[in-house]
Length: 191
Image 1 (cartoon, rainbow, N blue to C red):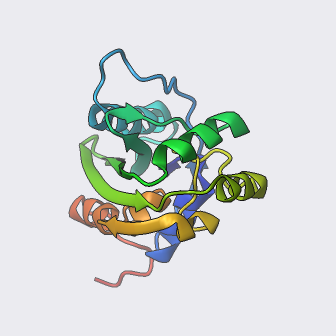
Image 2 (image 1 turned 30 degrees about the horizontal axis):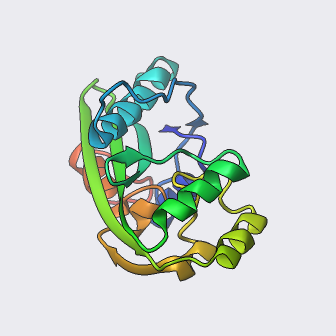
Image 3 (image 1 turned 180 degrees about the vertical axis):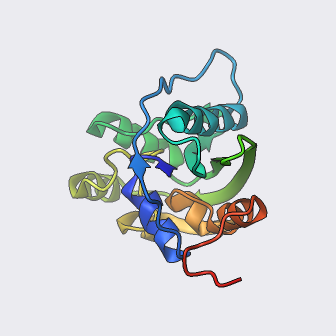
């Protein structure tokens, strides 16, 4: 089961041949705790998403993830309106930032496994017209940090170190190792 409302995560899982039997969008409070470090926040969110849907099917592997964009020591919001998206893009312009991806897996036996992946991304200095054009595209809506690297924002990226798929929404290498290490097998695996 995939505990995520993100169509990007579902698409990414499909790239590695994983097709969840069920996809559930967990309802949790995503407010950071006072003084909470971004890595602790990402881990807590991923685990909370997995545990929230656990009672729906205790006999399945439950996979959940959270993606956090961090500028300096600040967690940037998931942009739900244009003003926060514009603010995120201005803050990322010409700067390096980190994308933290936490992946949580609950096994049918009840074990919890988790990985945290960090990708470093540097944006070029953005012109006001580039920000305005990107905002007009609408791609920023619902995206952590106000951008989608797999879309038009790809031209903003001057440097990337780490997992590209993590920035899209799910670190595939680490996710597959987490799943296979916990005994998960794809339906087409003959091993």
